Length: 400
Image 1 (cartoon, rainbow, N blue to C red):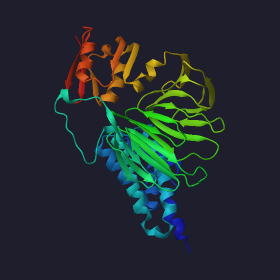
Image 2: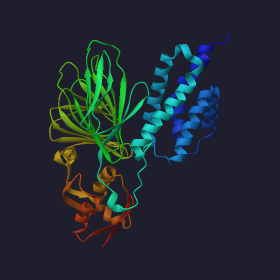
Image 3: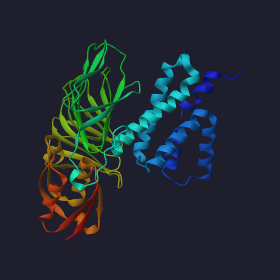
Image 4: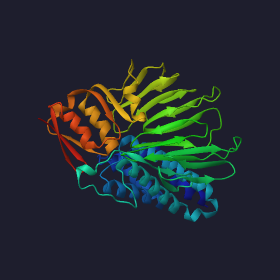
């Protein structure tokens, strides 16, 4: 007789090949005859596989491919792990497991869509005029291990979870974790997602402070056990790591693994940008990239370019890369394209260049992070080189 349990759980073990085919298929890339055959075979293996595929396809069609390559790979891995976790908790309700998995996928996709597009499921705030474009604010989405998603903002003063092992409190735009029983092995994982045009701070259970910038997400345990303290980052964050010589702190991104004991550094790893960078202010970090390890000292930055696959280490003015945490942007001989890329994340803007050569104009200066966008852009116009045309959340840049 066929094992019904195996029949039920086949869809949980999605092969790596299927991940790659799904990513290509959902982004509109043409698939080979063999890839089509493998995809169709997988979809027909279990009803849940077809449901998973349809949910992905539906979201991608609605949101015009917001999730890109690295986003999808990370997302698929998280979904697979979440499905397996749910399956373990639902051994007594196996006939409902595939429905629960599909619902979990929708929640996870919704979370990624939220911080990728600033979409809110309940509150829709149209922006008909340029003067309504405001700087970012403190807000985020917290996804608990149960799959529950909790919207957060700076006004909330509340305990989110309180049990015998740990508690989570939201206070003054900061999410605070406090482990009551450090010996417990019942550790679960949370994800904090910050939408475009926002920021948030989290204090992990070991006391490490993480400042999350716009359009970023952090996946972390509610408490640290074992040899290492490990978190995963998408986007940009500034870390103030609590010292613990016996338990290294590790930050994983799509391209780098950063190992520290106690230090302050900035990591910028947006999947939509070709360069990943780690900038060290204090202490020491060891960065592993493409199988090689590099020791980074204060005042230095390591970058990896996904286009040419080159790793570079250089001495930098760290303030240029960390000032956002302190409420301002500092730039020195920086291209307009790079500056506008940063501002687009913070103000949730779409940037267009009427004259491509304007992208390479260099600027030096300092901007207040919380200033009205119109006032901020006027400072660039005072150079008499460029002009900005603002319509809703679109900014077109042209030569004067």
